Length: 251
Picture 1 (cartoon, rainbow, N blue to C red):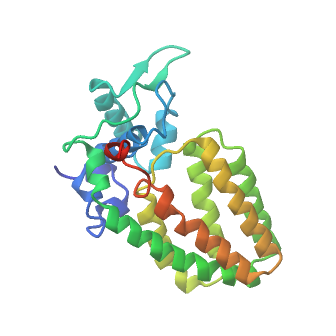
Picture 2 (picture 1 turned 90 degrees about the vertical axis):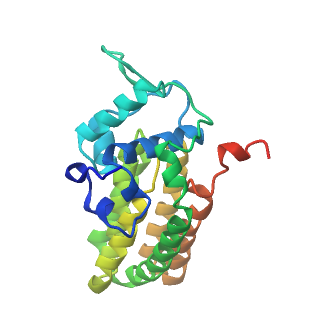
Protein backbone atom coordinates (compact mmCIF):
# COMPACT_ATOMS: atom_id res chain seq x y z
CA UNK A 1 0.00 0.00 0.00
CA UNK A 2 1.43 3.39 -0.96
CA UNK A 3 1.10 6.70 0.76
CA UNK A 4 -1.29 9.24 -0.69
CA UNK A 5 1.32 12.01 -0.63
CA UNK A 6 -0.90 14.74 -2.00
CA UNK A 7 -3.27 14.53 0.97
CA UNK A 8 -0.73 13.82 3.70
CA UNK A 9 0.74 16.14 6.29
CA UNK A 10 4.58 16.22 6.02
CA UNK A 11 4.88 14.36 9.33
CA UNK A 12 3.08 11.42 7.77
CA UNK A 13 5.72 11.06 5.08
CA UNK A 14 8.64 10.91 7.50
CA UNK A 15 10.12 7.39 7.44
CA UNK A 16 10.78 7.53 11.18
CA UNK A 17 7.03 7.20 11.73
CA UNK A 18 7.17 3.72 10.24
CA UNK A 19 3.70 2.44 10.97
CA UNK A 20 1.86 5.47 9.69
CA UNK A 21 3.76 5.47 6.41
CA UNK A 22 2.46 1.96 5.75
CA UNK A 23 -1.00 3.46 5.41
CA UNK A 24 -2.58 5.74 2.86
CA UNK A 25 -3.88 9.08 4.12
CA UNK A 26 -7.46 7.76 4.05
CA UNK A 27 -6.51 4.58 5.91
CA UNK A 28 -4.71 6.67 8.53
CA UNK A 29 -7.99 8.47 9.18
CA UNK A 30 -9.76 5.11 9.27
CA UNK A 31 -7.22 3.69 11.72
CA UNK A 32 -7.78 6.52 14.18
CA UNK A 33 -11.56 6.32 14.02
CA UNK A 34 -11.60 2.51 14.07
CA UNK A 35 -9.39 2.38 17.16
CA UNK A 36 -11.75 4.71 19.01
CA UNK A 37 -14.65 2.43 18.07
CA UNK A 38 -12.80 -0.77 18.96
CA UNK A 39 -11.86 0.63 22.37
CA UNK A 40 -15.44 1.87 22.85
CA UNK A 41 -14.33 5.49 23.10
CA UNK A 42 -17.00 6.20 20.50
CA UNK A 43 -20.41 4.72 21.22
CA UNK A 44 -22.80 2.98 18.86
CA UNK A 45 -25.11 5.60 17.40
CA UNK A 46 -22.74 8.48 18.16
CA UNK A 47 -22.70 11.20 15.54
CA UNK A 48 -19.28 12.05 14.16
CA UNK A 49 -18.22 15.68 13.72
CA UNK A 50 -18.49 17.17 10.25
CA UNK A 51 -16.03 16.18 7.55
CA UNK A 52 -14.31 19.61 7.57
CA UNK A 53 -13.92 19.42 11.37
CA UNK A 54 -12.40 15.94 11.20
CA UNK A 55 -10.12 17.02 8.37
CA UNK A 56 -8.83 20.01 10.35
CA UNK A 57 -8.29 17.97 13.52
CA UNK A 58 -6.50 15.13 11.73
CA UNK A 59 -4.54 17.44 9.41
CA UNK A 60 -5.77 15.96 6.12
CA UNK A 61 -8.01 17.13 3.30
CA UNK A 62 -11.79 16.92 3.39
CA UNK A 63 -11.59 14.61 0.36
CA UNK A 64 -9.40 12.22 2.37
CA UNK A 65 -11.91 12.18 5.23
CA UNK A 66 -14.75 11.61 2.76
CA UNK A 67 -12.95 8.61 1.23
CA UNK A 68 -12.25 7.17 4.68
CA UNK A 69 -15.82 7.53 5.87
CA UNK A 70 -17.24 6.12 2.65
CA UNK A 71 -15.04 3.02 2.92
CA UNK A 72 -16.11 2.59 6.54
CA UNK A 73 -19.75 2.95 5.48
CA UNK A 74 -19.24 0.32 2.77
CA UNK A 75 -18.07 -2.08 5.50
CA UNK A 76 -20.89 -1.21 7.85
CA UNK A 77 -18.73 0.51 10.46
CA UNK A 78 -20.59 3.81 10.11
CA UNK A 79 -23.94 4.85 8.71
CA UNK A 80 -24.29 7.98 6.58
CA UNK A 81 -27.65 9.74 6.51
CA UNK A 82 -28.83 12.68 4.46
CA UNK A 83 -31.08 15.55 5.44
CA UNK A 84 -31.30 18.04 8.27
CA UNK A 85 -30.87 15.32 10.90
CA UNK A 86 -28.29 13.54 8.81
CA UNK A 87 -24.58 12.99 9.23
CA UNK A 88 -22.24 10.09 9.88
CA UNK A 89 -22.99 7.82 12.82
CA UNK A 90 -21.10 4.97 14.49
CA UNK A 91 -22.82 1.75 13.47
CA UNK A 92 -21.16 -0.35 16.14
CA UNK A 93 -18.45 -0.05 18.74
CA UNK A 94 -16.35 -2.66 20.46
CA UNK A 95 -14.12 -5.49 19.16
CA UNK A 96 -13.67 -5.63 15.40
CA UNK A 97 -9.94 -6.37 15.25
CA UNK A 98 -8.67 -8.32 12.25
CA UNK A 99 -5.14 -8.48 10.80
CA UNK A 100 -6.06 -6.56 7.66
CA UNK A 101 -7.63 -3.53 9.37
CA UNK A 102 -5.82 -0.16 9.29
CA UNK A 103 -6.12 0.04 13.09
CA UNK A 104 -3.92 -3.04 13.37
CA UNK A 105 -1.03 -1.07 11.86
CA UNK A 106 -1.42 1.59 14.53
CA UNK A 107 -1.40 -1.07 17.24
CA UNK A 108 1.91 -2.39 15.87
CA UNK A 109 3.57 0.97 16.61
CA UNK A 110 3.31 0.68 20.40
CA UNK A 111 7.06 0.98 21.02
CA UNK A 112 7.34 4.12 18.88
CA UNK A 113 4.40 5.76 20.66
CA UNK A 114 5.89 5.05 24.10
CA UNK A 115 9.22 6.49 22.93
CA UNK A 116 7.55 9.69 21.74
CA UNK A 117 5.66 10.04 25.02
CA UNK A 118 8.91 9.87 26.99
CA UNK A 119 10.63 12.39 24.71
CA UNK A 120 7.70 14.78 25.00
CA UNK A 121 7.61 14.44 28.80
CA UNK A 122 11.28 15.36 29.06
CA UNK A 123 10.82 18.39 26.83
CA UNK A 124 7.67 19.70 28.51
CA UNK A 125 9.23 19.31 31.96
CA UNK A 126 12.07 21.66 30.97
CA UNK A 127 10.02 24.07 28.87
CA UNK A 128 7.31 24.51 31.51
CA UNK A 129 9.92 25.18 34.19
CA UNK A 130 11.45 27.86 31.98
CA UNK A 131 8.04 29.34 31.14
CA UNK A 132 7.33 29.79 34.87
CA UNK A 133 10.03 32.48 34.88
CA UNK A 134 9.87 33.77 31.31
CA UNK A 135 6.17 33.94 30.40
CA UNK A 136 4.78 37.44 29.94
CA UNK A 137 1.41 38.60 31.22
CA UNK A 138 0.06 38.60 27.67
CA UNK A 139 1.24 35.03 27.14
CA UNK A 140 -0.38 33.90 30.37
CA UNK A 141 -3.65 35.55 29.38
CA UNK A 142 -3.50 33.84 26.01
CA UNK A 143 -2.96 30.47 27.70
CA UNK A 144 -5.92 31.04 30.00
CA UNK A 145 -8.08 31.90 26.99
CA UNK A 146 -7.11 28.65 25.25
CA UNK A 147 -7.96 26.68 28.41
CA UNK A 148 -11.39 28.34 28.47
CA UNK A 149 -11.87 27.52 24.79
CA UNK A 150 -10.99 23.88 25.41
CA UNK A 151 -13.39 23.76 28.36
CA UNK A 152 -16.25 24.79 26.08
CA UNK A 153 -15.27 22.56 23.15
CA UNK A 154 -18.29 20.46 22.10
CA UNK A 155 -16.35 17.54 20.62
CA UNK A 156 -12.91 15.98 20.23
CA UNK A 157 -12.10 17.83 17.01
CA UNK A 158 -12.34 21.32 18.46
CA UNK A 159 -10.68 20.20 21.69
CA UNK A 160 -7.73 18.75 19.81
CA UNK A 161 -7.12 22.05 18.04
CA UNK A 162 -7.16 23.95 21.32
CA UNK A 163 -4.94 21.34 22.99
CA UNK A 164 -2.28 21.66 20.31
CA UNK A 165 -2.26 25.45 20.53
CA UNK A 166 -2.03 25.29 24.33
CA UNK A 167 1.03 23.07 24.42
CA UNK A 168 2.78 24.96 21.63
CA UNK A 169 2.05 28.24 23.44
CA UNK A 170 3.47 26.95 26.74
CA UNK A 171 6.63 25.95 24.90
CA UNK A 172 6.84 29.34 23.20
CA UNK A 173 6.38 31.08 26.56
CA UNK A 174 9.64 29.48 27.72
CA UNK A 175 11.41 31.79 25.25
CA UNK A 176 13.86 28.96 24.58
CA UNK A 177 13.62 29.46 20.84
CA UNK A 178 16.40 26.97 20.15
CA UNK A 179 14.26 24.17 21.62
CA UNK A 180 11.03 24.88 19.75
CA UNK A 181 11.76 22.99 16.53
CA UNK A 182 12.74 19.75 18.26
CA UNK A 183 9.84 19.97 20.72
CA UNK A 184 7.23 20.65 18.03
CA UNK A 185 8.64 17.81 15.93
CA UNK A 186 8.07 15.33 18.78
CA UNK A 187 4.67 16.82 19.62
CA UNK A 188 3.40 16.58 16.05
CA UNK A 189 4.74 13.04 15.63
CA UNK A 190 2.83 11.98 18.71
CA UNK A 191 -0.30 13.81 17.62
CA UNK A 192 -0.32 11.60 14.52
CA UNK A 193 -1.30 8.75 16.84
CA UNK A 194 -4.04 10.49 18.79
CA UNK A 195 -7.54 9.08 18.38
CA UNK A 196 -10.99 10.44 19.29
CA UNK A 197 -11.89 10.43 22.99
CA UNK A 198 -15.17 11.29 24.73
CA UNK A 199 -15.37 15.02 25.27
CA UNK A 200 -16.24 14.49 28.93
CA UNK A 201 -12.86 12.81 29.43
CA UNK A 202 -11.03 15.54 27.52
CA UNK A 203 -12.68 18.23 29.65
CA UNK A 204 -11.28 16.47 32.72
CA UNK A 205 -7.81 16.45 31.16
CA UNK A 206 -8.17 20.17 30.54
CA UNK A 207 -8.30 20.76 34.29
CA UNK A 208 -4.59 19.92 34.34
CA UNK A 209 -4.06 22.74 31.85
CA UNK A 210 -5.74 25.08 34.34
CA UNK A 211 -3.38 23.87 37.07
CA UNK A 212 -0.39 24.47 34.83
CA UNK A 213 -1.43 28.04 34.04
CA UNK A 214 -1.84 28.71 37.76
CA UNK A 215 1.67 27.38 38.43
CA UNK A 216 3.08 29.57 35.66
CA UNK A 217 1.31 32.64 37.09
CA UNK A 218 2.86 31.88 40.48
CA UNK A 219 6.33 31.48 38.93
CA UNK A 220 6.48 28.00 40.49
CA UNK A 221 8.89 26.25 38.16
CA UNK A 222 9.02 23.03 40.19
CA UNK A 223 5.25 22.61 40.23
CA UNK A 224 4.91 23.63 36.56
CA UNK A 225 7.47 21.02 35.54
CA UNK A 226 5.79 18.35 37.66
CA UNK A 227 2.32 19.06 36.26
CA UNK A 228 3.57 19.02 32.67
CA UNK A 229 5.65 15.88 33.12
CA UNK A 230 2.83 13.91 34.74
CA UNK A 231 0.31 15.26 32.25
CA UNK A 232 2.33 13.69 29.43
CA UNK A 233 3.52 10.52 31.17
CA UNK A 234 -0.05 9.49 31.89
CA UNK A 235 -0.41 9.00 28.12
CA UNK A 236 1.41 5.68 28.62
CA UNK A 237 -1.85 4.51 30.22
CA UNK A 238 -4.50 6.61 28.52
CA UNK A 239 -3.48 6.56 24.85
CA UNK A 240 -4.53 3.49 22.89
CA UNK A 241 -1.19 1.84 23.69
CA UNK A 242 -2.16 1.71 27.36
CA UNK A 243 -5.85 0.90 27.12
CA UNK A 244 -7.10 -2.66 27.37
CA UNK A 245 -7.25 -4.24 23.95
CA UNK A 246 -10.52 -5.87 22.84
CA UNK A 247 -9.08 -9.40 22.83
CA UNK A 248 -7.93 -8.86 26.45
CA UNK A 249 -11.36 -7.87 27.71
CA UNK A 250 -12.15 -11.30 29.09
CA UNK A 251 -8.61 -12.07 30.27
